[in-house]
Length: 180
Image (cartoon, one colour):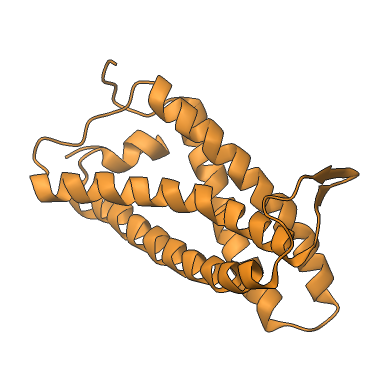
């Protein structure tokens, strides 16, 4: 596949849409477990379809990632940093894919159907208290790991944008920040 200076426009659009959706989802998730108010039902009603949207978007994003040209990391970047960048991206993809599936399976294990309007999605696992008891904390731990990894990703992006100014940030942002 050929090299390019920037990611495909559709990939960039999905990246930023997912960034907003994931941050919203993480904060909604925290609010859901921290409240017993009347807002809880509203938060759940937002959380489920947003999770399904993220699942669909990450599948499209992975397809685009494999089928479109992508920019190379700068030659000036040390090998360990390139390896860490690749590892962190694959960790993000894995968590973005796993987290909604864990949530869906958790709801299935609890006997709660996952619906989109009148469409009832099939359960991923049979009803089981033991499975629910395993998936519930797993959903929390993956959310925490995802949040930490997103923060590290953001820190690295800002380092490339504001300190190194090496074009890495521009490849996804398409912003006016220029290489030195």
